[in-house]
Every structure is written in C-alpha cells, then in structure tokens.
Length: 481
Ligand code: 5AD
Ligand code: SF4
Image (cartoon, rainbow, N blue to C red; front, top):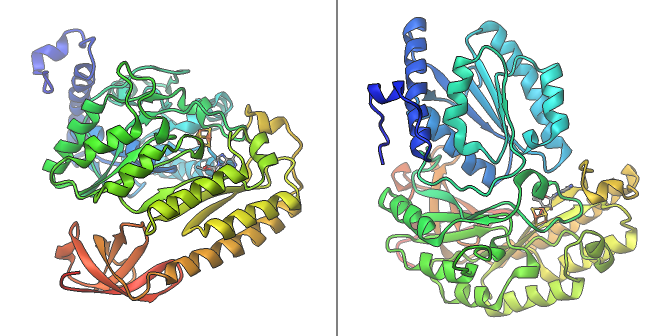
C-alpha cells in the first residue's frame, strides 16, 4: 500500500481504493498547509474539540492523526488556524453548548480571516442542525457527519480548494475503512472501536438515527490494531461500541463478544482490557465467565439501567424487566465479587410517575452502584418518545434530586469498602491541583491520588488506599502487593 504518494502521482486521478485514496488527499492537504505556512511565515495550528462520548473521543484522535500528517501543529487552544468541533446530540444541552462555542469561534475568525472552521459528529446527522448552521453560522467552512469521517482528508482538501461552505452528510454506510492515521491522547492507553452504530432503538435515543445500523469490525483487524498499539507502548485498551454485547453477530463468520475478549486476552504485553457499553438484554453467561477467568479484563462493568420500573422500561423499548435486571446484577456480583457496577439512569421519561422513580431508587439500593450517571430526559426530535406526553419540568427536577442523593450515598458506601486495601493503579497523569501528586486509575475504574514521580506515568503500581474521599481515594505507593 502506497501511503506516501510522490509528487507526480498527485497530478493523476486520486486512487479509488481506501485508505490509499485518503493518503493521497493527506498529501494534497500537506501542500496547502505548507504554502499557507510560507505565506503567513509561521506554522499552522489546528484544534480538535470533542463534545461527546468515548466514541467521539476516539474519532477525535483519528481527526487529529490526519491533521498532524497534513502538517498542522496540534493545539488545545481554539485560537487556531483550523478548528474542528466533533459534536454530540444525545441530549439537547450538548447541542446548545456547540452553538454557544460557535459564537466564540466567529469572533476569533474575525481576527484571523485565514482561520477555517469545521463541524462533524452526531449533531451534523440532523437535517435541522445543518439548515440552522447554513442560515445562521455561515462562517463555518466544512460540515460532515459520522458515516464519512474516514474521508476527512478528502473533505479537508475540498475545503481548501472551495471558496464556499463544503457540506457532505451521508444517511448511512456499511463501510469500515482500516489503517488511517491516529494521534493518541495518551501514549499508554487507547480506545479501540470494535463496532459502530446501534440497532436497539430505545424510544428516547437518537443514536441509532445518527450513527446508523450495527457494523462490527473483523476480529483480525481489531487484534492487529491492538498488537501494534501494544508494540507502541499501550498497556490498557478500552473496546468501544454502542452495544458491545452484540458484537460480531453480523460478521461473515459470526463470533461473540466473549470470544473476541478471549482472543484479546492472549495479546502479550497488554495489561488491561476495558469495554463499554453493555446492554443488559444481551449480556451472556459466557461473558461473565471470561471476565471471571481473565487477569486482564478490568473489574468494572457499565450496565445502563435507564429505569427501574418495568412499565417505563417497556415504554423505553429496553427489552428487560426490573426483575431480570436485578437477577443479572446479582449474578454478576456473585460470580465476580470484586467488580464495580456502574450505570446510566434517565429521570423524567414521558409518563414517569413517582411510583416509577421509587422502583428505580429501589434498584439503585439493591444493586449498590459504584457510580451512576443520572440524566434528565431530553426530548430528541424524530424519536418515538418525543411524541409521548412529557413530564412537567418541576416534577422531573424533584425526582432527579431525590435519585441523585441515593446514588451518591450508595457510591460512597461502596467506595468505603476498599479503604485500607492495596490495589494496582495505572498512573495516568500528574495531579491537576498539586503537581507532587499523581493520578491513577484502579481496575474498578475509581481514581486514586498519591505522591510520586511523573516518570511513573503509564506504569501500573500498587497503591495503598489510605483515605476514601467519596468518589476517589488518597493513597500511597507500596512496594509489592
Ligand atoms: N435523554 C436523556 N438521556 C439520554 N441518554 C440517551 N438518550 C437520552 C435522552 N434522550 C442517556 C442514556 C444513555 C446515555 C449515554 O445517555 O442514559 O445510556
Ligand atoms: Fe441509544 Fe439504546 Fe442504542 Fe444505547 S442501546 S445507543 S441507549 S438506542
């Protein structure tokens, strides 16, 4: 595969095949960046701003990889020559943040007319959003969606050549393009997409509309990617998918998620494996077994509940009951006693009554979540729930506060159980508040702060959990467990 097209070949037609085609356009972008750089007498800066989930964060690393190869200097500062917002639309407040920040970009562009602005990600898959941007944010130079992100280099080249806004949104795709450049945020850990899209159509959720149908990557491609990451210093991977438990079902040679985990578990040099998200309806006994047997799979399971009321779960199209969920959580805790279970809960789904929220609170108390993300229901246009009768805002707010208190109490109680233990932590960073401290992550995903040298970043060290501060620990490095 020719990843570095020579000068002559750029005068020819771009290759039809991927990823060769994108490498051709990366080279093309390089030339634009280079000539612009000469014109301005300085290197050009580019910022990738992420608004969404871990999937989006991984996509942002791919965008950054291409920008870097195209000759940009990557920066976190939005006062740059090229800024791309990788947007999220799962809840309306994510959309509002993007509009707010766009206003700020406009003022920066007035000061630097050579500045280019791009928008991509889930929010761009909504027609109404693109229409609004065309009308009210005409200073934006490039818009694309989730399905053609692999074409970023080509779109970037189009943008450099075109004098007007470039828009390319696809309805769906069955294509997965491998082997494009990636610029990782952390040298020692990485997200890996194992599948894209979602087929579940929970009635509140916009994801299946903006991310398309489920597509799994081939296990060989996933393993190859992880092996090369490990050779490059990665010790922890996070396998990403909207519903990892249905991984592999649509492959030519079907394989289960548990089987994929067994293969990844064997990769030498890899120390930790995480994954998200698991849909409770698809979580198999085989998966529990693999987690139990593995020394590498982290002791953490994110198992979105959404609601504890069977009536509401039914309206949400979640396809499990309160009792089924409770039985599953109990089985997981019995089989893997040191596991942390975390969850997502929505408050204020249409038709939710006080008695429904009581059921949710009952589940929280019974499962004793180690952490829970609680969300106020957000009406997403085009989803079935948007047409249902909405709960008044003040009722939602009261319910939300009541739930939050229980969630925080159980999480705190769970965290106290580990106080006084010594556990392995992957050192991730220097502490933001006090540079003499490091921040590490336990296998169960909890954070611990302890004194240490920044040379330990990327290493797994034993840490004594001296003090429990609610959701994190203060600890001390120990020699040997
Ligand atoms: N409103 C509120 N929360 C939502 N989520 C998904 N869609 C919505 C919505 N319309 C939450 C779910 C999901 C998490 C990623 O976001 O809890 O698990
Ligand atoms: Fe949305 Fe449900 Fe799919 Fe999760 S499983 S992405 S909540 S539709």
